[in-house]
Image (cartoon, rainbow, N blue to C red; front, side):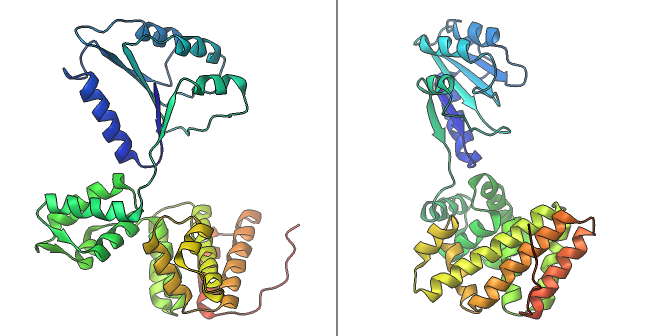
Length: 327
């Protein structure tokens, strides 16, 4: 019995597909495959599926999607079922639209977890991801440099589930045997995190026209204002952390540890941008973002204009912030 969860949906789906092919070689229409939607599943239905013998096969496969196993009154019955599972059944609880977050302090939840193998499909490390990207381009008859593969990973968010479709788009678009950064920029839509990084870089380099273009790009993404201010604030905090690392002669590895960013490529970009600014400017940017976030949460003023005002303030340099009480 398994729980499949995690942000790397590509690996999750691949693993689920492998299980299906292994246990249901005749296809998913066979008597040995059971699919349940967690929104409508009852314990009786689940128990009946568990107790149904496989037809002309060794095992049955039971998939349960988006069922919160760790809440509700049915947990005791599930515990009894799990404690006496027949050898012929394989069960997978898949968490997609709901979060996998059991409260380990509760006795019943601890009892449930005793019987389950929990598989967390995490985002892959940079080296493995780059190899995977290059291999998929090779399958399409194209090659790509390590630097450009890192760049593609960065602007798509570094998840295989997003990358697969983008690789196909770029490979189909490029007329050359080798993929270039220009090919990537022509057809790939950057994720929010990438655009806010580019905005940060433009502000640090005092390229204010480009910064406003990037801000317009952020608005066109139709994200909620609170999401935008959070993303901009996060990048400014990461930039401050990078500047602190530079001040203290710390490495990219320490920056990754401090900020929780995924890849060395991102750390390298942050360190490069931070080298062009000062510690006081980074602090000013973080405080400005905090001030705007506070105002956004405290007033009915047009949120878009507040974000424009923030970016304009950051583009102008480092005026003194007004004293403000947040209590």
